Length: 276
Figure: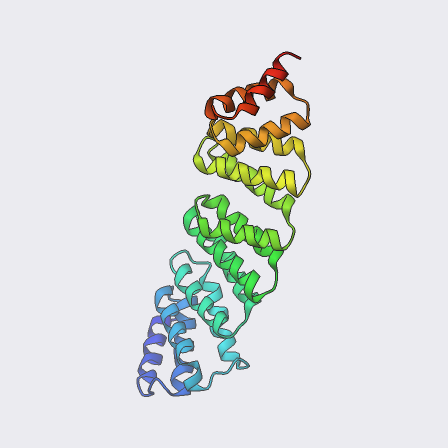
C-alpha cells in the first residue's frame, strides 16, 4: 500500500480548492488520517487537523458533522504520541473551551497530568483543571483536590494556596485543609513556608475542628521553625495551660519573658508556676 504516493495524489487534488471550501477541508482531513495512521508524519497530521478546526465555521463543519468528530478523534489519538502530545492537546483544549464541552476538556487536562513528568508544569495543569472544575463545572470539592495536587507538585505556588483556602473555607472542608497543610509543611520542615503552613493548620484545628492535641502539635512545628515567633508562643502558652502541661508552659514563659521584658504579668505567672 503506497500511502506516500496516495497522499501526494490527494495533495494534488487539494490544490484545486481554496481554504474556504468544504471539499478542501474534507481532503485535509483525509490527508491527516493517512499521515496519522500510515506515514507516521504526526506533526503534519496535527497541523492539518488544526487547520480544519480553525476554519470549521467557514467551511460548514458543524458540531453534528461526522467529519468534525473524526478530527477530534484523530487529535485525541495523537495525544498518545509523546512527539506531538502537547500540540494535539493545545488544539483540543481550544476547541473544547470554545464549544463549552467541559467534560471533554477535563479529560484532556487529566491526560496531560498523567503524561507530564515535570512537577512545575504538572502543577500548572492542575491549576487549569481546578479552575475549570470550580468555574465551569460547579464542582468545588473536586476543584479543591486539584489545587491540593498543584501544591504538592509546587508548594511555593501562592495562587494555588490562596484559591485552595477560599474553596476550603466556602465548602467547610476544614479537615481536608488541615491534611493538606500538614503534608505541605512536611516537605521542608524547617523552611519559613513550613512555619506559615503549620500556623494555618494550627488555627483550623483549634478554631474549626476543636482538636487541641493536633493544634498543639502544629504550633510546636511552627516553633521549631522560628523559636521566637510571638504569635506561636502565645498560642502555645494558652494550649499548655488548658492541657495542664505545666513544665512545657514554664519553658514557653521563660522564652516570652526574654522577648517581652516589660510584660510584668508574665513574670508573675512564671513565678507562681515555679513555686507550685
